[in-house]
Image (cartoon, rainbow, N blue to C red; front, top):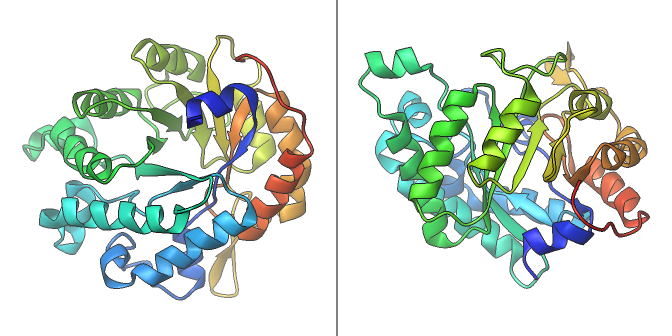
Length: 293
């Protein structure tokens, strides 16, 4: 049974944040988190093993910003393939021998189409380079996360399709009104992605589970849905950012997210293995489901 088959009948638990955990461990914000896959692989492996131990059935690679555009800030733009391959191998090692899927994390490039054109950057080529390295190692799916612009997501999906397809999950980050930066509503964005052959769509990086549920309530259309909310809206205190949503809150909200249509639940910024353990325990109490939303 593969991930797509499982999601037809089961609610699955994903993992939580990596970046905010690294900050909590003292890694400076100015550091390239993705390079740690090469320089400190055991740190990344331990985080992923902790999420698996908490009950995550899907773990993401530490590659959110491992594209040439974002890596250029650190002088690492020539090491895209190396970093992504290393990250995928670390995740696969953590998942080895367990019933766990590895998702290759791909984030946005962090620049607009106009900026890309002005700098002579081929956005599709950037995505293809990263995706090809992840697929080369054999990730189970490509997880496009925290995109805010449909045009860029469409470019990324086009790159994925040219890289050999497989399974893709496309997740947007948007404001409480449920509109992307271009003004497109989520319902339209989801429908267009499904028409492109994307099997799972979703939202992530929102201000907590309840805000995530509000974003997708009332959205029509069939298909599998993923939700990866933040641990609330962060507040600065004690020299660091603090996320208010507790593991207990995530546990209580799991049923609401499932009722709203989610088949894959995880966490984004501020979430920890404790949040995922609470969510996984709540999911385990839910009955199997039949058919698609």
